[in-house]
Image (tube, rainbow, N blue to C red):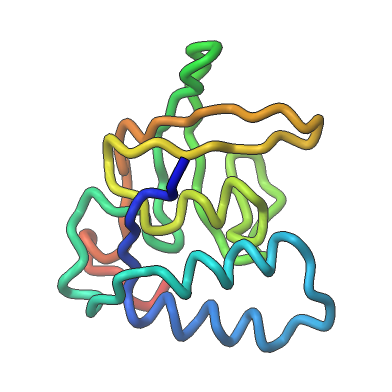
Amino acid sequence: MSAPSITITRLDLQRLERVLASLQDVTPGVEALEQELARANVVGHDEVPAGVVTMNSRVFCRDEGSGKEYHLTLVYPQDAGPAGTVSVLAPVGSALLGLTVGQHIDWPTPAGKLIQLTLLAVEYQPEAAGQYSL
């Protein structure tokens, strides 16, 4: 399955490149994020549509296999940990970045199972809320 097209903001790209540059080890999560960034359509923070997942966005998605629904907030690695947060360096985090409502991603679980997630809504997006400093 080919990956869906993604859109990210120039500001997120710059911040994520700084995060990647600061890391000592190249992990699968780092490689996945680098691949996502390399294929992304980059736009200004004032040009990103409201239905696109940007950094610090809160999203609502569904596992197509089980019907289970998730509320997740996409965060930088240093902000991950609290319930409902997912690091952009986690497989599902890099896969969520830049998605548009209605798109699907394949999420590899720690157990090696593949879950298909559908993005149902972007409940909060910093850019749409005028929060560019997050």
